[in-house]
Amino acid sequence: MGLPENPFSMSFDHATEATLQRFILPQIIWKLKKWLGLGMETSLSRSLEHIDKYLSNIINSRKLDLLNKQQIIGSSETTTHDDLLSRFMKKKESYTNEFLQHVALNFILAGRDTSSVALSWFFWLCTLNPNVEEKILLELCTVLFETRGDDVSKWVDEPLVFEEVDCLVYLKAALLETLRLYPSVPEDSKHVINDDVLPSGTFVSTGSAVTYLIYSIGRMKYIWGKDCLDFKPERWLSADGNKIPTNLFPSMQGQGFV
Ligand code: HEM
Image (cartoon, rainbow, N blue to C red; front, side, top):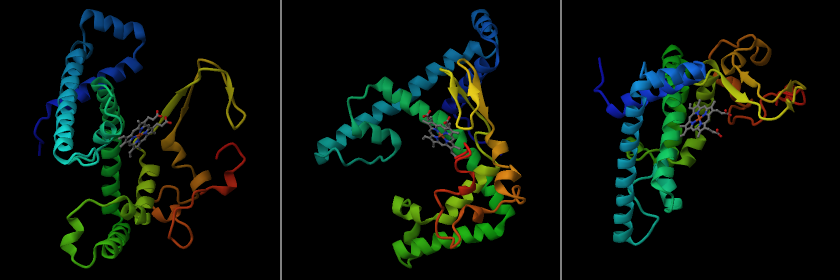
């Protein structure tokens, strides 16, 4: 079943793919394609224009909302929105539209597919592991019962607050376990700007790149044990199951790993 087309989303995907090609292709090739008006380069600037316009509309209307609310209530603390963008605006309203646009774009780029991919794997793993799903639901009901009472209709009135989310330790362990097996970012690279030595003693020279494979690290028997391929949120929990210890790998400390 298809979802309705979303022009912003389409432009965004298009621009992301075109930008990725610039990473993959040698500079001379993509510059030539841009110059000749070939491939994805042709519509990149159109997509970027669309994204800019979309974001600037949101920022302008959000600024107007904020201003109206302040005039009515006379306080900078009250607003109908409580998302990341509004928090940036409330903190220091002299941020330029361009700056806010970059912030919003950065968050969408960094947070959209990472979160949706993680949640897709999470729900898939829950359907395969009903015992885990049951524990998540039990924890959620226990917390909501304590914070919102026994009227179940009140449980879904408002989104969870930070204090409630903090109590969902098993859920957090299940999300960590999901990201261990199916990391949304399976590999990541760093570029070396000055000669350096890694904690393991490995020398890295200026101009080189270091890539670490998050996907592989999450599946190493050496680190996680024989059951490294099993989905077991419990592996993240303390013996009493009440918290996630800050230091999960004491045996690796001092070996350049942690
Ligand atoms: C499951 C969800 C997410 C995963 C798996 C994830 C993963 C990552 C990874 C691997 C990095 C690179 C870290 C590094 O290179 O040291 C990163 C950076 C970043 N992420 Fe996320 N991320 C997620 C969600 C989000 C969300 C929701 C936002 C914002 C709303 C966000 C904002 C950022 C930003 C701004 C950076 C760059 C930080 C920097 O360069 O200092 N991420 N993320």
